Image (tube, rainbow, N blue to C red; front, top):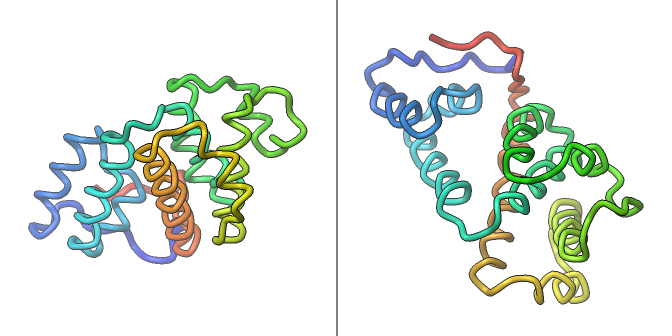
Length: 176
């Protein structure tokens, strides 16, 4: 159960945002139900994540692999629950999802994917990225995609930390 109550989705202050979230996402997920406790934060978050998820040139399978790896490292089951179906839809295999926890010893990831996973692990665990780690990922992407990859890793670390600090879970009762 979440540490704070979810926002009242019928409150007049959040109604326009609720309509936007439903239009863009199909429903108001637990994450947004909590964010709507602060409409300005929810609005900024929605715009930022829409950019990361829907306006990036980064391939969907790479984006979702990064998100799923971050969920594993940070122990964020809600993030994993939400993104596993998306990862499969974007082209990851179930075997790859199953091996993400031990990707270093898996044969299911390409050199590009391994470089991305190492970059993800380094940013998530250590923040600072050694030159060798960056040098391994750089040849696989144009500068725009490297910015988008880095922003995706940073963003989903933010998401998992928010979810876990407030104990937001997929099985919580939904606000109405």
